[in-house]
Length: 223
Image 1: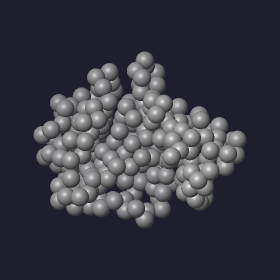
Image 2: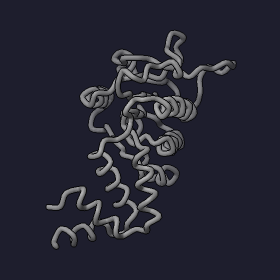
Image 3: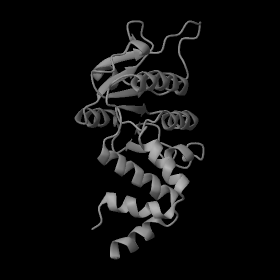
């Protein structure tokens, strides 16, 4: 059976040199040091906006917790972004939040709740060197669940100086991603995907980009 690296090398023959160069450049800017977790968002445009920003910022993985609200896979708004992201959906139980937290902890992530509490750390002051970060964003009306608030390792907020008590979830996520990724890119932390992960993600990109990629790989496998 062909390895993922062999499959990737083969699929490179089916796109232009310009696209190969683009993928080569962008894969070096992807990270799993930061990931986003959307807990039970019910407005699809907010989910889509977060995904678009994650792609723009180079954040590869987005986790979607579906308790009362289901992720709208038919949305054309997020389609362009989700093709380049790795999505993780938690939807098998009535309350899927604990499973998401367990999975992320097992992968070495700090559980960071985004809340407007007055005693939270400001995003620009968050210690980035303590390890990988999973930022949880709650549903639009009620925010994060008690499960997240009780099990979070840290709490973070975006500073605000107006009368409005909270930001739209997609705006909050965008500001947070920009702050964290700018600081990571200027620092010395090894935040990029390792070589094996780059191969896996790049292979995903090529499969999305090439029509009939499954059939092409089947023929390659039989050679």
